[in-house]
Figure 1 (tube, rainbow, N blue to C red):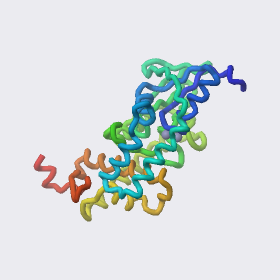
Figure 2: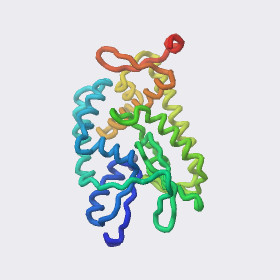
Figure 3: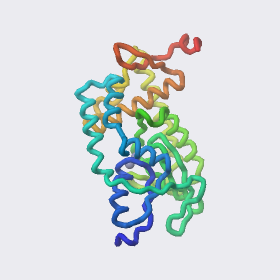
Figure 4: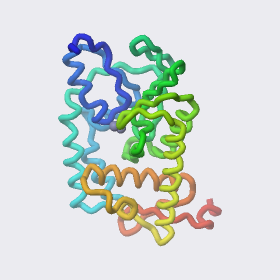
Length: 273
Ligand SMILES: [Zn+2]
Ligand SMILES: [Zn+2]
C-alpha cells in the first residue's frame, strides 16, 4: 500500500501504542488524523508543549508513599515516551453526535473513559461489529489509572463506560490488543466482576490499618511488578481503586507521617457525615 492511498487515520485514544506514530504517518500521507477532543486534551496533558507529567507524577506518587529510588525511575520512564509520540499530529475532532464514515460504512462513535479519557469505540449496527480499542480487551484487563490533573474518578468512569458498551448487540469485537472475540457482553461482565473483586481485596487490606497507596500497591501487585512501566500502571491502578472505595464510603483518605493514607471507613465515620 502506498502512502497516498491513506486518507484518514483514526485513533481510539491518546496512549503512545495507539497515538504514537500518528504524526509520523501523517507527515507521509498528508491525511487527516481523527480522535475525540477529550482524547486530544489528554495527549496535551501527557506530551503537550506545556506538559509536566514527568515532574508531577513522581511527586504525586511520593506523596502516596512511593520511595525516592522508585519515583526517579518514573520520571525517566515517562520521558522515554517522548520520541514515540514525536512529531505529534494535527488532529481533527470526531463528533460523537454524528455517524463517522470509514470506507463504505457509517459507524457510531461511542465515547467512554476510565482506561483513557475520551476513548472512542466504533459500532456498526447492521453487522454488529464493534471496534473497541482498549475499552474492552480479551484476556487482559485494561489498565485504569488515576493521574493528577486527569479524571479524578477513573474507575467509576470505566465501569459506567462498560455498562453503556454492554447495551449494544455485538457479533464480533475488534480490540486494540489480542484477537477479535465474539462474547462482548460476557467479557464486559467478567471485567465488571473483576473490579468489584479487586475493590473488595483493597478494602480487606485496609481492615488491618491505614495504608499508603504505595503500601497497598505492594500488597496487591507485589510479585507481578518487575519493570518501571508495570510499577506505574500498578500504582495508578491501586489509586483508582482506593479513590473509588472512598467515593463509595467504604474507605476514607487522611494523612499519616507526612503521607496520604487510606483507611477503612468505620460505621461512625459514615454516620457523622
Ligand atoms: Zn490504551
Ligand atoms: Zn493499547
